[in-house]
Length: 456
Ligand code: IFM
Image 1 (cartoon, rainbow, N blue to C red):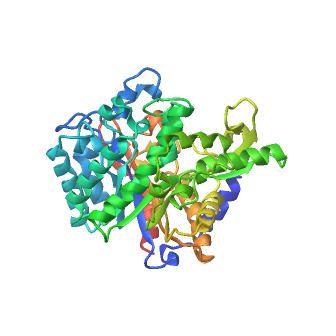
Image 2 (tube, protein in one colour):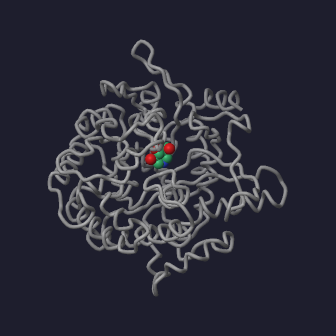
């Protein structure tokens, strides 16, 4: 498996110009994972600051307090983006930097900070793409129930309105919410992400309120900035059954509904995929009259975030889903340090799947990348695996484009190494290496490769 990918990519002749002159090329990052400065200049705490302070939540007791110090290094990082020839930068705003308690008093210093970041992008000829919510809920809102409280709709609208009014002259591309299923599933069902809630009622209430905020957020942006280009971003993985048995195929179908369909389908007016996942029917408890219509959203683009595929087996012991993942190392397939299988065809399959829906004008890969055990040797990081990973996935994106599927852009995850949630600093995704003791930046060979690829 490893050898096949290596040889295919070594021979790869793809050029960025093969994708057409209007294809969006970019690089992605998020506030909590990079900024640090968690209590500086009026910022409030977020649920991730609190989660990281609890025992046994984050590997090696790492915290996001300093992260990659993008807060003070943003000028250097943006100049690296320019040096690498990357025209678009996807970043997120930290809600708790802008409205420290989530609602009410505004922190002007937080807004000024984002003005400086956006201005630096513009001054360097880089288009900023801003995600409004990337998992870092202000802690004070969590105290009031967070995503499980329907009042979050009003808090979210207040925050979105403020951001859009403030930045509408500078930011054209907005994304409402990053990976809603991670918020509901990891944060409110499994409890492995902040805020660490578990169980079906937390999950279903959070899920419905995130879905509502996603569509209401879009309309809020458009009402203030009608010419904004607005999307939202979904994590998605090609799902295959472990065997050809009916049980495994039905299990794969359930996981596909949960991971790939649960948020896009209500936004397209199709409702939640209850037929495939009967336990979702209890979500109706959280509905109010008119919610079916409120859930609908006409996004200008949908962001696809794809890294791997999942192989799924039926399991009597897993509640509600009766299905489990078969990890890549157990299957003995080539995988990243996250134990995510390297399976480039997954990105093609996901483009094809989303392209089949009516009502999505454009698809953009807003995240794709890999964590490998990088080593700095004599001042150089020769991350051949990452370069090959990106190349082999890009070949699949090009295949989709050449087949006429509506794919319009590709953003690498991520600019720099950063705080990888529960994995702390062990997982390195950056095209730029960070020495977390000195905060020194070193462009990895994959970064130089991306620069050269973009110039051809
Ligand atoms: O780092 C994350 C990102 O925050 C969300 N998508 C997946 C990435 C890699 O795990």
